[in-house]
Amino acid sequence: MMVFLGEKVQSCCGIGTVGFAITDMPWQPETFAADRSFLLHMTAHARALTLQPEIHALLGYVPRKEHINYALDGFAALIARMTAADIQPEKPAEWLARATPDHPIYHGYPKCRRHGILLSSLGCKICINQSGKYPVMPEDIEHMKHLWYGDAAPQGADTNESTQ
Image (cartoon, rainbow, N blue to C red; front, side, top):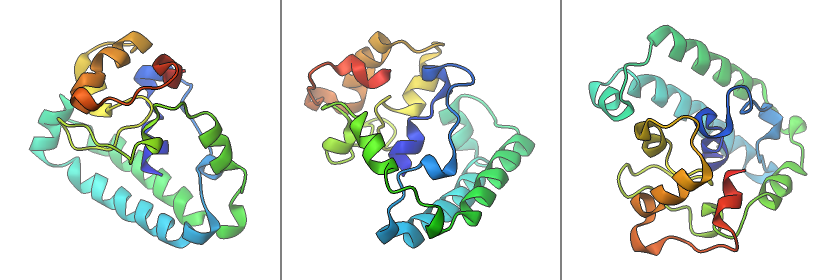
């Protein structure tokens, strides 16, 4: 779930193109209760993290508390209303079908070497934000891979495809 959410990066995809329905997430009936519980816990934890000065330094700005609360409250409400009956069984396969061979889900869910966060097909959200580039282009992501993986970057058929 976290890798899926990590791919919703407006600075890479463009303004207005990163929205999704909660039912678009790759829910699995077998892990639904645990996944929902985790996401609700993660949302509460994210709220607490945004108050910490070291997180502000990492992000490069101080998030406005009212914006964070609005976004996290809305996300948590949608997650809380989600039921197992809402699961669309085809969604995990649809997401995986878009993944290229270099996608992190095929490489043991690696984390950024600098920031310790899970990598998505777009890389590290914090590295991307700190790059100061908007929009982030495929060649920028390709250039940043050494920061995330070091010398162990996965090799795919076309590593730039994962940014589209």
